[in-house]
Length: 309
Ligand code: PMV
Image 1 (spheres, rainbow, N blue to C red):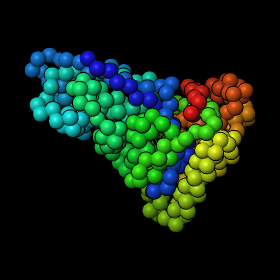
Image 2: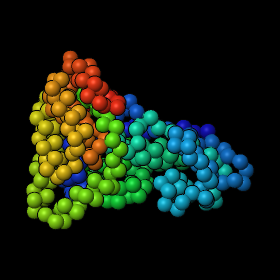
Image 3: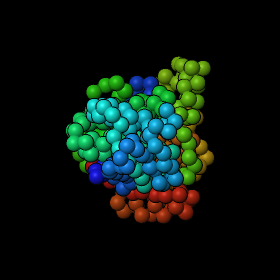
């Protein structure tokens, strides 16, 4: 039997603009994770897929052709050059809330790829794991930038530009984020599709908003690498103003952002596709508990305080 894990993730700066070639920054969130186990199955039965968290069980051959679990298992087996369907059970579970911008689907894919590679004793590079996962992201997202599969595979803070060589970030001085869930599930492809339609209607306006967001990611990188994380607060607020302008914020997100700032956070913004999902707030060690308390009182379904290192 083999077991593999993959963390959640949070986008710190640059979401949406990253789909249009601007830089973004993301970091792994180790407090939540997906787990895949692979073990021998019934002789002659083929691959059995099981996702007990969502009450879903199915033989690979009976799963819908485009089902993300079917696609990731089939593509990985072919990458591993396993010629005929093996008799195995692939079981996945996850503590990452679904459709909330923490990368649940992506982490499930990464854990399956790694679980299969270990089970068959065939090493796969991070690049191969990320590539295989990206194929499935296309089913979830339509036009994904690739940031989620990258940060979850490499498990390091990344400065990400679509189709460019990966750059991991050296975090000179660790900093804390409170991540709070609105409880509103918002599929990424809906927000990404809406932004695309708006961009098509007003390309100049949207391109200049994306440019501004890209500049914020560049400044944030400098702050992180030079050991001045306090500078990230105002950059988060500015990034949030631009995310409002591209219409991906929501009343629930704004309520949590306001609560975090009132409780002493140095900056706050939505994280991920928006419309629902999570906010992130930059907190010092001394106000972290206060911000967490106020976020919970303000309606957050869950709050994670994580250190970015
Ligand atoms: O909803 P999430 O956390 O998977 O975030 C998607 C980030 C976007 O920039 C909106 C889309 C993308 O593919 O980068």
